[in-house]
Image 1 (cartoon, helix red, strand yellow):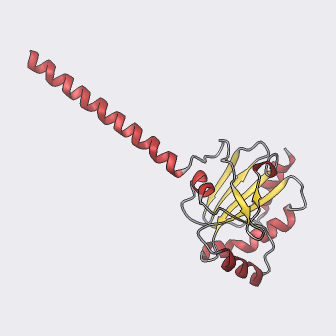
Image 2 (cartoon, helix red, strand yellow):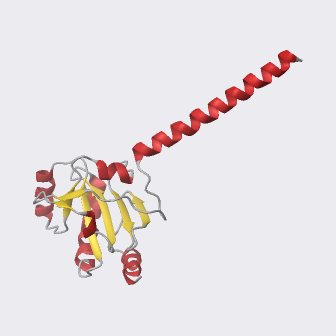
Image 3 (tube, rainbow, N blue to C red):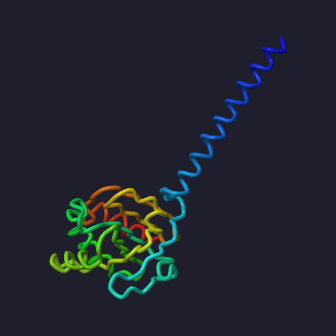
Length: 179
């Protein structure tokens, strides 16, 4: 009977150790990937203006609906959605409560600006020089877009290209602006 009890204790300890290893490995993975989830508070933006290099204080984004888009000039799906982003920018930037924050992701600022200029795009571009903002948001590739409400909550996360000039997209943002 003693051998049977000893065997049961060893099995129970192995199961507990396995569960603890699993739990700790899941938590440490989340810390590296970011924790942005719809319905949760959005991570703080740590970006600088791509033209002047001026670091943008987080307070400039407080109380505004944020359209945060991570993109690169080498990214074909990014280029496909750019005309709709420009149209959204031109329409929504009339509101003091809206900020478009397009963040260059693993790309050269000079190459990106050449591309934007050649296409006639005028929306603002920000830099995430150390990659901390992309990491906090859990960006896995581009394009990725995050919509944040005036209270600072992440309300929408879109992975991949999207038509931001569609009535549905504009209506969604208008609804957030009206809240």
